[in-house]
Image (tube, rainbow, N blue to C red):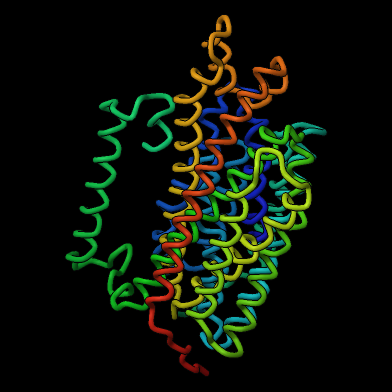
Length: 440
């Protein structure tokens, strides 16, 4: 549970502080790497963790993920992703060892609540820490919690006997590097699936787990929800800090209360799954709430009523908790649980990358025309794209134009995440409902 807390905390603290961190290094246009560097590595190693846990035991698996997660805060975000890939799956794997599937909902509800508590702390306190004593402490403060988790794990865990950020940003979309990375990614994905389907060795992802309309449609909805949720989380702090000119602390405070809806949705999902086993119903409700929440935020005007900035966030946050933890509940064992985490993580990686690509492409295309004939506009454009904090130092008329262009890009990004969530709703509606089997 300590590691589950950390996973939730780390996932939102970067969303709350990436504008400050990237602006300090003049790299706001590549700020998505603060998140994607961790998510890509986490996604790559998630399917390997369950195999490591089977070969070397849950104890070694726990230590590897906890230690590398803590070291990452000192060394690099990518190393944090290596450890982070095992934090959430660890709890699910251990639950799968100990708890019958039908009864797992209550334990999942506790895990959901801890994850949500961590996410709330990261979203609300992270920006305050960054503004107060410096953004580096947002990461250093997580190391003692990792040390505590490692110490507890050492005592109690026993082995059971059983190219998107480049396109339209650093390089044009027609660049050979961008095209080659997108084509290469697609080719490697196809090759991976072919190998997984034909190999006689133990597969990394057993494709048999995805046979049938129920798992396929459920996990398509899972990918859509992951993409939509992370795009949403990644965009909101930027919207508050650029469009509304909030400080990082104020932006984090705006997210604190609505973030309570995520663990509430997770708790509801856990209880309902435990008592009634309504899997598809929860997935449908969760994705529908995400569509509603994303659509409401997309409808926000450049200047709008203050109450909307609070109320409009709730539906998507509630849907995020409901959909995520219900879809993650369908597997019957640790291997399937890791597969589902991987599938959802693919969505989160694309969510951040696509969001960044949309916003940065909009800035690249629209800023030159929006700034008109002002003298020396190209250094100004470069400064706007590389430092969010620089916007507050611009002359009022230039600042307003820059904020309006940012607003256009963010609104287009919100609209995209709304459409993706809607696709998830469609998949969930097509899935044939099935109750959970009773297990003693």
